[in-house]
Length: 159
Image (cartoon, rainbow, N blue to C red; front, side, top):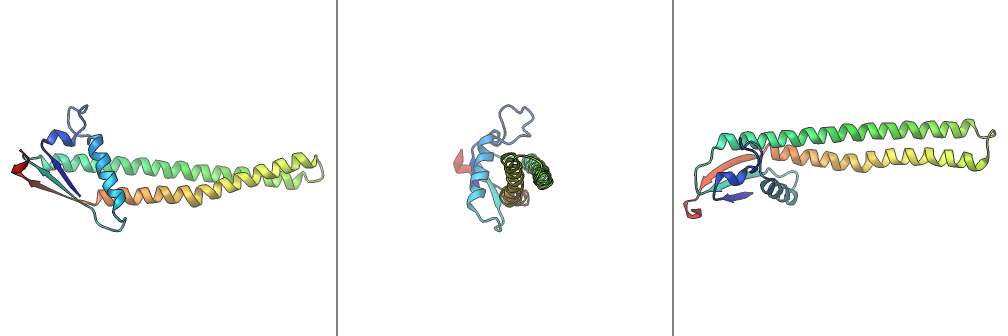
């Protein structure tokens, strides 16, 4: 992916005086381009600018962004796993109660308890089957970006 800029400041968030945070426009552009390409393709990022860019500073900022994304995704995975286990336990407990209370309570209440148990187990399975896959896919995309090669090129015609 090629990124053409006139000034190095375009790469960084204007609120960050130390220029360590990538700009939202740049992040959005990179993520959109990354969505289009295959997860298996290696992603190279080429920064084309009229003026010289501090390459090390940009690489550090980009690596910091990728690391932050991976931390957020790992948190998401942990929360999702906790939710899955919690819903599974709740479902099992309600199913066990419905079995143990079969002849002791009203059939309607028994059906409600059984339905809650079944629904909880279904939510756990749904989370495991669908949400976990989406989070894993996002993690693969973030790893792909982190492993991308960053190249710099000067184009004096941009001035």
